[in-house]
Image 1 (cartoon, helix red, strand yellow):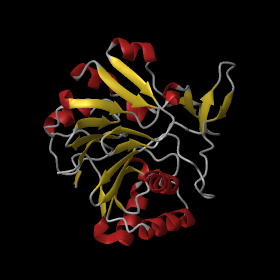
Image 2: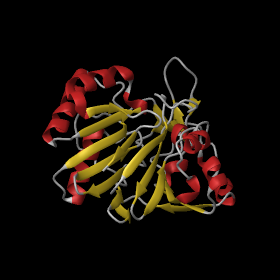
Image 3: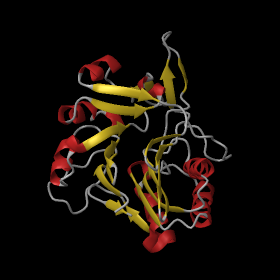
Image 4: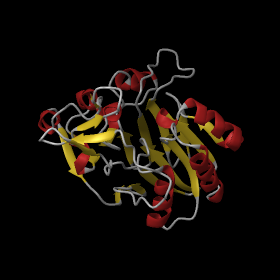
Length: 278
């Protein structure tokens, strides 16, 4: 086995009786050089599901945070209860004061509610990076992804609240993904893909120099994608001849149905308990 990714937290549960579903994402990654965790969900399912799926959180070498939204980070204290001290790899912007601001609703806080100092008292050892970086053998974080596509647009309701009380556009620069080199090609593990799925895939190819993407798994943020956006995404999947595409979390069920119809047996829904092995 070169790599095994098991989804611990996700919006839906399939056949694993006793598992907990929640709006969020977390994946347990096993490699020959050790195990690590990618995101923590909202904290409701991380302990229960890890025990049910027999994934020992005490065995992880480090935790990677994809970005600073509540549905990927609220479970950090629960993880630290199992493994402390623990190295946490992330972008320095994860603690930004983040809100969703829409016309018809009051601003809603969607960032990390914990102070860095609180998590450090629990045993968190933060390492912050903005760049593409190898964090273990053949395992990379994308860091800040170049956003070159002309149709993967900013989300206008995503804001950062400044000290003066005003809101400014949140570019979510901290959105990062995991890229793993395997004998079958790259495996790309997504948190929410706020940087744009196409941007992320192109960036992974550019930075690694690899020509093949074997699999993609995680949140694609295609839930609100228009037909043209989705069509161009499908074209890129075909261009790279991606063999396995496991969408989940922020992809949206309607988009998943479309992807399943188009990709046939290459598509799978990455609900709690789903695993990808190379």
